[in-house]
Image (cartoon, rainbow, N blue to C red; front, side, top):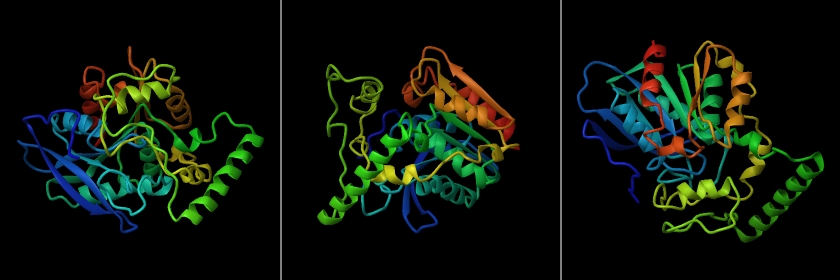
Amino acid sequence: MEHYITALSESVVRERVTFQNRFGIELSADLYTPKEHEGRLPALVVGPPYGGVKEQGPCVWANGLAERGFVVLAFDQPFMGTSGGTVRNVASPELFTESFSASVDYLGLLPYVDREKIGAVGICGSGGFALSAAQCDVRIKALVTASMYDISYAVRMGQTREQLEEHKKQLSMKRWEDAEKGTPECILSYPETPLEEIPKGIPEPAAEFMRFYAMKRGHHPNARGGFTTTSDLSFMNFRLLDYIGEISPRPILFIVGDRAHSRFFSDIAYKNANQPKEMYVVEDAEHIDLYDRTDKIPFDYVAKFFTDNLK
């Protein structure tokens, strides 16, 4: 299962580590460290896309930022990848947000990390979770989001009051079914092995996600695109970014593709955040390009942002 979608840099060391979140669930992570370093280094937490694992986009980001002098921790969310949690593929806004703070706990105990210089990177859904964590965890001194999704907004998006009520009813009745069966329903979207081409007729953005998760480009057996069906209930009852303005005066850098279907999530968060904040638009890039396209991800700009702000 240790299939990484990018090669490890010769100047970086990667080590598998584990630690517990505050609920006692063991999180599995990869720790990236520059081979040549001295003194205490700044550190970054990198969270995966919603449904992704550390061997996909996070390994690309961690590798690129470790090359530029940062200690980087890329983790699997609980119930995902190689992290703990007995019911697999459960999604939880609180637990997924907590993973960032648990990662800060781990990094801050390393003897070669400067615990006053810890930042966070959230890719896709982890952009919302990273921001949510930083609303209260002031140890996170600067943040970068890439192709940010606010999952708590997404599960309600575009639905009328009547449609929401019907959705809640369906999910609540599904809980009866799950209780009777003894296991929760989880419908996966992507195959065990990568596809050669995307089937015709799949609408966007579903087809876009398949271009990454279902193809050799980003496929991983631990990231097959699905959460337990009733996971949406917790997100319908939890608003991730109500206090985004309280992150200030710690800075936020929102990175979006100019063609990203998800750009409006970053636009909303940017509007609601207080200064200092910045929007970086990557030309000719769709949502998934900021997962792995090293020719699109502005690593040098991100490294400068953290170097300037982790003080």
